[in-house]
Amino acid sequence: MSDDKLGTYITKLMTTILDKEQEDFVKELAMSELQRLNVNISDFLNKHLQSKEKQETEKQLLQEEENAK
Image 1 (cartoon, one colour):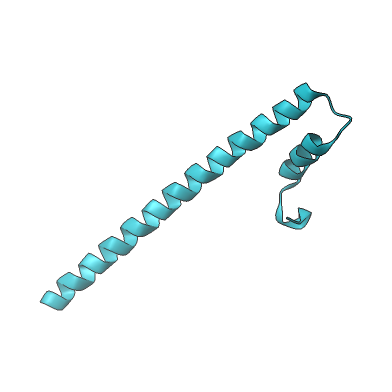
Image 2: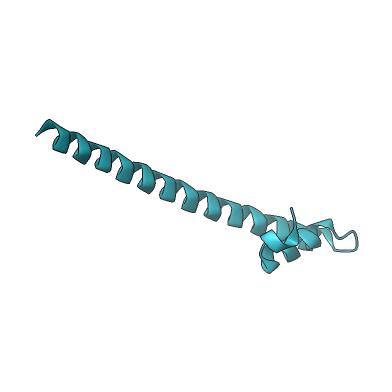
């Protein structure tokens, strides 16, 4: 992944994890933060996809109703 596609914060967390001179505790904190962000992003995407699917289903039902008239 290129840095231009990632936020600065996420890039810094990744760099911290890969830095051989960082203490393990700091690396673990960075890893935990990345995992937390991953969960938040996954939750957002799931909600958005469910909302989009619901809208598409409602649109399809409305079209079927219109066609039935």
